[in-house]
Image (cartoon, rainbow, N blue to C red):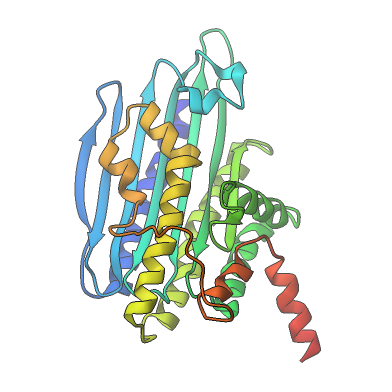
Length: 311
């Protein structure tokens, strides 16, 4: 893997960061991203962009990083011990959106590329990424739209791609200590290197380029929904679960911290406010109780197709 491929991916990711920020700023209509550039002492750096207190987004970030070093951190070699001791380049864009309105879902995504090298051996490379949706007051039609866009992004690469990476997303974004998914899923993929670089890179671009098509229509449909203090309190309570996942289970958080990345950028994913309440449960049959029906793996598109046939 020549390093011109790394430069090609990096060029795409910087452009993706620009396009994501432009689309999200337009959707917000009230605030703009502020940028900070940073350098990593061991090698590399990035540019972090954060939006706060907008008309739609209470907090959001779209971060680019390119870090490299003499040895992959343990979080990257736990599942692939054969890579231990290799030098590495890791380049990626990650984003998280935390809206004000409890009826607008939180969302996260990232696309990334790794090269692991060792003198005298061929470089090992792979792509990873995906996107997922975390509603607090979910709407079935929104979830179906989200997954339809994900399926269409995957379709050119094989009919097996969406089902595989949809299932992987359900598995990855699972809070084992709570016995629930973080949200309604989407796509998650890692270690993608089959079919050649160009095919894998095209798939990564398809996923990154489809995020705004998946998310912004949901933002537009729900941003005007009235909400009360009760719904705000529930949003903050459920944000606590989001924090728990990122700090307990997320491999990306661990990789960033272990690799000496910029802590402020890594923890940008956390919401500005969250709350925890001991042994709280929602009232039976309340709107808050309905969320539980969405926090386990479901075949959303199959359910939607069956409902359409019945109608």
